[in-house]
Amino acid sequence: MRMVRRWHFAVCVALLSTYVLTPVANAQVAQAKVNPAEGNLQVITPPAVPAAQATVNSATDQWTVTGELFNPESGFYTNVAQKTIGPNNPSCPQCAPDLDFQYPKSDSAPLSGTPANLYGRVSWHTLEPVQGQYSFSTIDHVLAPCTSSQQTTPCLSRGMTFGFRVMALNPQANLDTNVTTGEDGYPVYSDSPSYLLKDSAGKAHGWLLPRDPSDVTQGHYFIPDWNDAFVIQRMTALLNALGHRYGEDPRIGSIDIGLYGSWGEWHTGGLPDTTDYKFGRIPYASTDTGFNINQAAYLANNGVAGAYQAGSAASKTAIIQAHVHAFPRKQLVMLTDDAGSLCTAMRIDTGDFPIGLRRDSLGSYTGWASGFPVTSTCTAPDGTDLVAERWKRAPFITEPFGNGSSPTFPCQTFETDPATGQLAILEEVPQFHIASIKNASYCTGTWAALTQTEQSAVWTAGLTAGYRYAPVKITVSTARTDGARRVLSLQTQWSNTGVTPTYTHWRVEFRLRSASHASTALWSRPSDFLVSRVDLRKVLPGSPYTIDDTFRIAGDTAPGAYELDVRVVDARHYLAPMQLALKDADSDGFYRLGVVQLSRRALPEASASVTNASQ
Picture 1 (cartoon, rainbow, N blue to C red):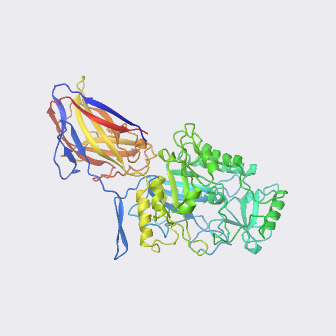
Picture 2 (cartoon, rainbow, N blue to C red):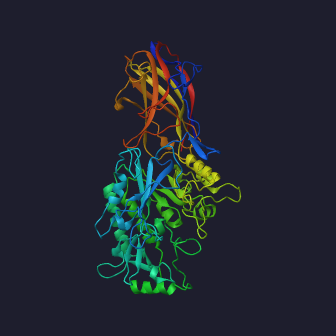
């Protein structure tokens, strides 16, 4: 239960001639509800935008979406993926060898605007093709500014960010793996640099496992030896190079703590096998008929008996710490499959950027419930569950579960909770306070192939995720100080009808403009705007949060009608202004709250009750 503080504030005014704000009816501006009955205080209720919703025309199957907001780490994000390359990969006529990105996705929901976040995964070998020589062209290509609103290649509009994960293993040979040739003449599929297959001393730093033990001509997967000190050292060097280039770049968004496991997801149980995947199999068990191939490969590479091994706790911690060291001022998110490693990440003190969560199986009831600890054994000294409570301080980012549909890999994005009969994706977003969802990977391959029920679930999940802020009530008053300066007091009640707070440091600015000359601001320079003390990161969903601000204004301010506006801007001056759940937005990000009148009147003493919810 959140603690609630209550206090009273008094607005004391001398009985001298004083400017006081009184309501002015103006149907063309804001159409704010004004209640003049509360003494001489003016109370403004800004016109709000109703909750976001998607409705379908059953005759045309076309969706209409209203009230959608596009903000950082909130709602849908856009995904890009590396193109297929290599002579042994399936034919891809449209794929160039420059490691361009495929964009957009055919199974994406048709959004009415552009999400503020773009995300993609990059193979280690594309970033370090030669040991110690780095190439960042793949990421830089995505960071290129957009030149047209109709551009179909990846680019970043002003204010957008690109988040990424680095992969060392992608056990799907028909995707973005680096294809080389092994000593047996058959292809080797690897997301790790080729120098790990055999270094200058002739030593291998991983395993060559067969794609199909019954047909060695199909080639091998290369799996890094997660416990090899050389592998850890090269991962650390790569992350340091990335941090040096992008650690202070405002265009870079959240970064996954990746590299370990299949797709960098911090598990190794998802390697292809005939029961779950359609891309072949890699045997592990000693009873498997292909195990002798594994053992032979291991003996050849390392000279000791045994087969493929998972990473030790020490190796996994080293990979996590390497990410933290490389990106001290970026939002990191940790994959949730490895409970021990997740707890390790949750306990690291990263200052102003607590490590968040990421899971790539939204919509799976069985897979989600068994793999993600709703309540965990990872606790703080005071007993707080560090995983379950992390959403209050850092984002939980997801993507739908399943990106293909076949008899061996059925569509699993829309599993049903047997206890409630509801689609799991609709339960998980509010239950786990999901911040952002990938707008793709809905199993079927195309948006049109989803049923209307499934499409509705996608819309509901995306429109529910994240935050939704608005000032819902502003109480305005003025007074005169002993020094004859005017004091403008704003008591603002903020509402967050989303499921998460924002995790960005925003600056809330108010301004006054002449109502008769809307382009004329009382303060025209950004340095003159009235900056609120509110920290929106503390405005959690479901609890009204009231903040009191007092501003000094010039004593010679002329009486008349003034428009009160508000906007929320990035303290780093890169992101676009936050979209609020309000009507009447201007092109500069300000929202019109209402019109007030500055007139000469004496204001008697007044008081009001204030309720503020604390973290």
